[in-house]
Length: 163
Image (cartoon, rainbow, N blue to C red; front, side):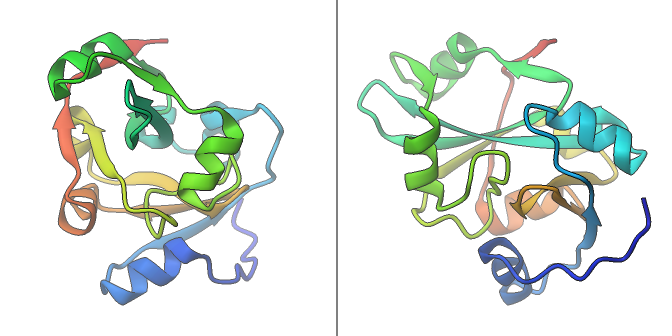
């Protein structure tokens, strides 16, 4: 889908511009509950290269972000073990929204309302390019995965389960 729609700035794109990060914009028709499979299909990219931004919390309700391949799920048990937490669970949508400042379905790890620790599935860092939410439903940005570590200090973890 190469219709060049003008996308107004989001906190995520403002963050990337402030950090001089080069990114490409990819607009698609947002489908409720379509997930990464839908965006990958519409954009003609591998779902494995589409990265989900998941807002989770530990047993003390401290929020954190987990970046995961679109075609994988997070093992919260493995993640908790690796980061020294008793338990990790997804935040309720309204809580995730409060922490991130983004609507669920449009959550970006860049430019969040509240600073959160970011964990990234380590194999994401080996991809040549990733597509991650740009801060709005129906809007992905293409970046080099190293940007995650350079700008967010994302910590690599191994917590992927095949879907």
